[in-house]
Image 1 (tube, rainbow, N blue to C red):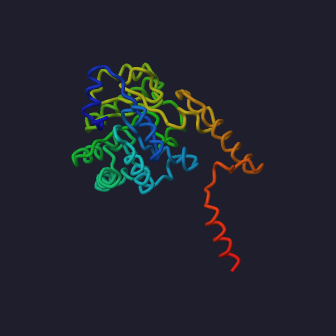
Image 2: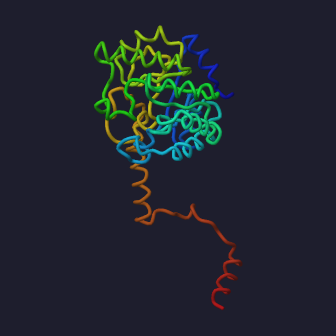
Image 3: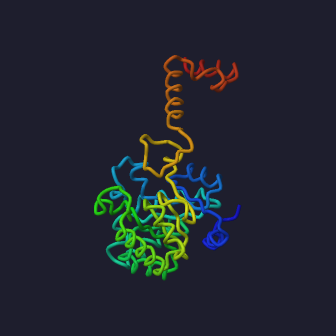
Length: 281
């Protein structure tokens, strides 16, 4: 299957076809996502919580994001890969933002980058886009600034807050974002904003009116514990099966059932005899 391009995604939007996106953080996971026919893979800084066991995304470094994006890019034969820019890799200086974004394409093989924030990020986004780097924006619940937002909670639930989310989305669109993530905002708010959106809108907890949806791979398959956010739909519960499989292996080793005769390698009798003779000398 040929590599999916941004042009292909805009064509889907024009035709009313939904766009699919999932996270992946390593080569085997990205292979699964790619072979399943997902349109875009997000190498999210959510890896801090999902893979590294952190309590937030804030400690994730640029080098760590580039490392994981490289692995995913090697596996993505079809899906368009978006690398998530971590906290403080784009907020301080515009020149640094452009350079860091470029590293995702030049070193890690991504086709685009994602960054969080509304109007205040428009300048950096414009500079990155002008450098020839496609940018995906992110409004609503922005995990990197969740402390300022009062925690991991839905945004845009009052008229003023909803207006602010809409203004931020439009500012990112005007700055040149090819796509914008709407996270944890009321479905009716997303639906009302959609007619104004020429950029691709990918929802996560923003209802069905968006151009597509994104979920975290481990949430979708039930690989990590906990109920997860309200918007998470589990399509499998693999964690219990994984634990059971590992426990069965441990039990077989302890009870001498593994390895068995079929799991070993043989040596001709004469070679074995010669080997034992060598050992005895």
